[in-house]
Length: 392
Image (cartoon, rainbow, N blue to C red; front, side, top):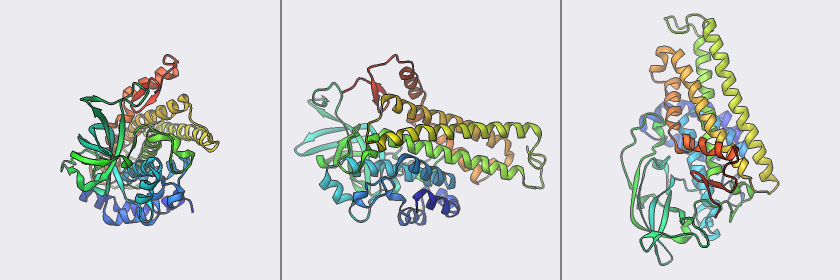
């Protein structure tokens, strides 16, 4: 059975866990156990370690479906898969084998290069303060980013003008967790801030932040961390948007016995018109996602690398999905009236979606960078983590 089919079967279970997840400020043990037992933690683990190594469209469907069930569950899974999949693919073979043979460790965190790493023998002394460590309360290891410094300045990758940015993998016990998860949405993700103070990380537990050359696994991993993240965030937004529209449709046709913005079964003509438009917007961005990732998947299956234009379209797709789905969620929130104010799926999805709009991958800077590439005014540049950069 495909993981996407299993995800659809388990929607009722994960939906039923959502309230308890939020009350705990993190996923319940039952939720995490279900993710593990059903095999979802192997979504992007190479097959050589017993994972699924799912192609983009399958991964998109899994994240979309679990985010439909509960946004926080979808978010924790997607963050773990970016961190776990990249570690399993890009760490040296002996290190990856130690981590991923047998029971798979949950790895979560924040990959922005906010840390400072000082070379020390066969490793680095890492220090820093990171915000929004996605899913970190569920983790056994931290995936975290930093820049290598030497002689007081960023060290450059040999033969380039690019700072040496790395991802560091270390046990959670070596970080100081900050008890500050007080966000508007995604309340059950446990995405706390954290600090690391002069902790030694062996070099074999690090990899280049922007690498897209796997040491384990197949051509899927030529996506790199940013490509994996684009799939995940797109799937999350699609799941939240679909759930909001489905909840609103159910409310519109229900006999609640009290006044609301939906005064008759199915709402009035104005509502029906606006609902049709919201469905069109949502279905259009979902079709865009499938078109974009189907093209990328075919390229990966041919064993080819992605073009700069394909990466542009994946980032443009994510940006547009997020903004459009947020508009759809606003429409549903307003027309649901007082029902949106009370605890439940409508309120939770609205909060979760607007929390997601604040992620750096969906900011206006990325949209401007997409425009530059599409206008061909940066012909010699390629994509870095936060925009177009000169090639290394």
